[in-house]
Length: 138
Figure 1: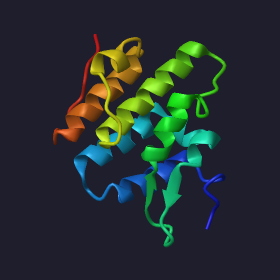
Figure 2: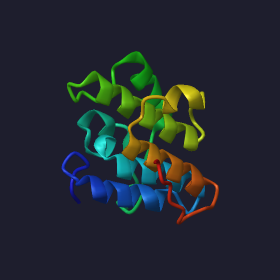
Figure 3: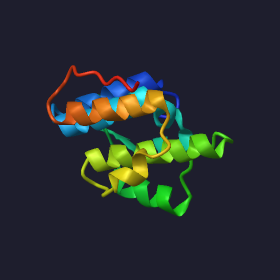
Figure 4: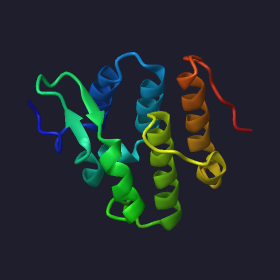
């Protein structure tokens, strides 16, 4: 089996979706990670992804990842503080959807660009069972 460090982000997303086990909240979190794109390709984040021994499912240890994010030991590292801040907000929303991290919605949505706020809105709708809804941030 391919090492997690060498695995393409899309393969990780597939394993995470299988690990979400049909629970809309968890699936919504995975979809947001997939659509945002940065974290699934990020080597520092990958240390928090746990692949099941059979290699067919995975999960994110958000209980460990979020303190790392909050302490600054996990950062987006893009070289652009605006992008890094937005990526941190996206990860906080992912963790909130997964039930492991409380957020104040106002604090995490402020400053997210048009494309990513669409992904956030669609993830929230998906989490509530509106699986094919689309947001239109005009």
